[in-house]
Amino acid sequence: MPSARRSLAARVGGFFGVDDAWARPRPPIGRSDLLLALGAALLGLFLLELVRSVGMLKDLPYPWWVQWSAVVSAAVLLLGRRRWPITVALLAAAHMLAVGLLMPVVMGQFTLQIMYFLAFLSAVSWARDRRLMLVAIGVIVTVMFAWVALQFAVGNAVQDVLDVTGGPQAQRTGFLGPISASVLLAVFVNVLYFGGAILGGQASWRNARQKELLADQAQTIAAQGKTLRDQAVTEERLRIARELHDVVAHHVSVIGIQAGAARRVLTSNPVAAQGALSEVEASSRHAVSSMRGLLGTLRGLASDADPGPRNPQPTLDLLADLVDQYSDSGRTVTLAVVESRPSLIERLPAPIAHSAYRIVQEALTNVIRHSTANSASVTVRVTSGSAAYLEVEVIDDGRSRVGSSGSGLGHLGIRERAVSHRGVVEIGPRVGGGYRVRVRFPLAELAVVEGAA
Image (cartoon, rainbow, N blue to C red; front, side):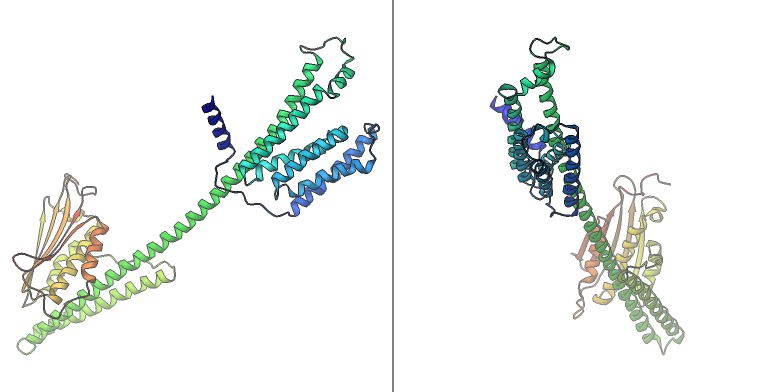
């Protein structure tokens, strides 16, 4: 039995939110409260005078102003029903008892019953301390039902029923006797009255709680949306920074290569020198054009405007041109493409192909700027099937040039590009000499599969 009682208490406490951390905000007494109290008082006095006109108040021993005071004081309680809900409910119960004992006809008026109902409902709806609310409402309901019981046990309720029905010897007109029916009717009416106030108040409390939770969730979603937008802008700026680094490093390296070649053959082969200088001019123009596009995109991000369409990003089909740009009379760069099936490289996802191109570009730039290598090789491997992957590898035969240590941004950019596509990176010197940059991108969940069209 104790376990069953605890279980019932837990269910009741859960229904009324006893352990809920949320506390409903208490509004100050406002215009709506004043209008409600004033309207209830005026309507109550008007209906009371109608009842007086019918003649139902002629036997009361109290003057009219006492009767009016009972109505007005009940209406005044409604002013604080949201601000001090439990206190108002207890005062309303005391008011109900006092007026019911002294002036039962006045207490039974429709407007007073509505005022009491609103006070009890507000206690359940607006109470912040849910446990105290349960105790207060429990005391009120217990006292009220005890009063009803006393009215039938030792009061004049039984006599009133006998007077209406014609006394104890009156003939029964229903399936129950008049006393039993009166008791059941009084219990039923009070159950509906107090039960409606309690359940209505709890429904109002739950509705307010749900609205508050939805408002908090909406605010959280809005904050997360702003965070995601800021994160997207930051990631786009980082992407542009990587692109800018790659573009500048690549074109400056190419310009250095071609300028050196032109210097060496300037007197012996003016035609070749002219061609090299033309390459310098074209590369510088391309660099300026690329930087302007990237800076335009940055301006669009800074102003929250649409940066406009982007130029097509280079992919692996341009690797041959890239390798030619890094080759000169003093350094040899070769390219090898290994495919498990023909034309697989053409079906690579564009973002991965672009990242692979930029990785090769950065690796070759590092060879030119920081290595003594005389040759380098670029190998691209693409396989299909369940373990499909794309691998790019850049190997050179040199060692680090003295006094040419870089900022590390190139290697950082390579690793970031690889991580963005779940790639595996290997960067470092080779055991047999030289340097290796190798990145492998898994393709098992992408469109490159055995038998793809």
